[in-house]
Amino acid sequence: MGEATKIKTVCGYCGTGCGLLVEVEDNKIVRIRGDKDAPVNKGQTCVKGSFAYEYVHAKSRLTAPLIRKAGQLVETTWEEAYDFIVEKLKQIKAEFGPESITAFATARSTNEVNYVTQKFMRAAIGSNNIDGCNRT
Image (cartoon, rainbow, N blue to C red):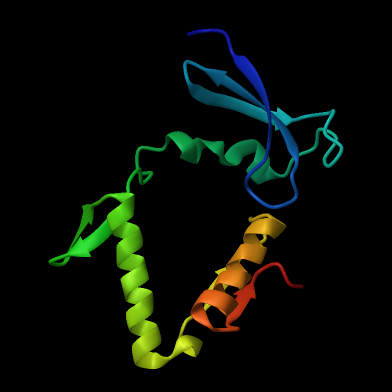
């Protein structure tokens, strides 16, 4: 076992932007704690910020896009996956209209990501059907 390297970063779990200190040993996250110098959280973290990092190294984590072909999910390239998504959205929009497509924004994303999501839905798709868990 090597010595832990401490990396200052910003939590990506939600859009709050808490500062974290990530400890890495042998290219694996071994611990996360709040950064006391971070103005947003002053060293505090939620349970997800502190403990939800194990998914990064999970054996069951997807590492490539999958497309269903002949009833089976098979690995594909990102280019093929994006082309598939574009074609399916075009097909749905043509057959059922733009209001048949919706998007779900999330508080886990930054304001900028949520802005792009709503802009895509309204400008590219032509639908106002966007909702999110971040409205209370």
